[in-house]
Length: 575
Image (cartoon, rainbow, N blue to C red):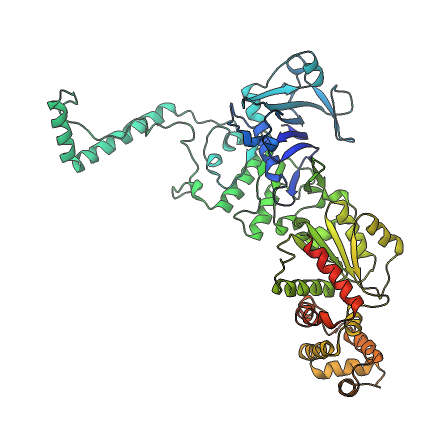
């Protein structure tokens, strides 16, 4: 059954214009709030859903401008033979070139033959569904799809409540699993009559006084109710129609009473089984109601790990757990640029899959600080906490995230930063300079619009702190190092890096007599980053250093260091 190969939206809610060629499998839409993700799902549902009418209002028009009609076009390939019939649909058959992701108005050999179904809503708010091709429009030809074919193409909406899909109601997934249909009209009608009669037998005894009064008054007024009025169920209240047959467990409990997550899991699994007859599913907030392990099961059920997916899924998510379970080619970032919406495939950027696995939170952010290592991540987080204490808004509240690139290759943070810039993120690199990166890589990052805060030449973060902060702040750093590792180990590090010439006691004596010398500051910077056992080499430790030492002593640090930190602060708070 058909899948969407091209989706076009004009003047619908937050979307003024959008053209997108989705993948044939999972399409997970991420992006900032109000970026249009749910609107895309609604557009697909409204265009392809099997409904005879929809209530539209002025608020459904972009910027409330009803002079420009809503137009939603879904072009479908993989169609069954009956929809490719030349006699029926020849004037509307078109072609789709997967290499260019473009629809061609004339079908040709070597590319799929497709149909475009278009929904148009003008100022009169009346929706009109029709097939579309340029040549048909030029010749004044009009045609819609038969209701049976519309029902076959209709997507399944896996929402917060799955009641409609857990009974044999119209367009339910249960009706698409097999050709089996229950023909129980007479039996259901008889059951309804029996229910009315049984209720009346019991109600007559319990409501005898009331019924007697009603009978007396009716007879007095000449209203015929027979020998006695009866309390029966209203015939309309017990009529059994569409959706009356529903799934139950072995104890007779309706499956519609399942929790949200369980319902979603079951309906998603059933939808996959029914993919031959209805292979488009819509899931808003895919993580809703699910623990991480059940979210992974849901994504598997929807075909996230399939090489040749049978189900085309359009979903939205704000969950890093969901993103870690997906391939980069299955994730699309929704953005609005110069009045046009786009859905950019994350996998289109080189080297992004590892970042998606390790730092999925970054893809849900607006602004990203790409850090050379865990030290910079902790340092940035600690400063942010300090500034929040001064009354500033948290970087996380502003839609920010941190990425740890591992610290081993100096080019990596700029390369990752460039990859995120291509995807439309706002990016700053926070890095050491003890191992200088390749100038061309840095230039490419800055030319693409990235910004950076890099410590002064030949300095790692620890070197920068010991050289830039006041003696009082260095006292605090030494105290924290001794608390983290123990005084003996800190002493051994200092002795080792000075070839046994200096120990911790000598450093403390120098501080009392003359203050810390440049040589001692250099030694402490080197000793503090002893490989495998650094004094502050973790996110938590550097977070505490930044919040409790650097922030409170920033005003007494040297001017160049203050300038670097102020640049970081300005960038964060401009998010």
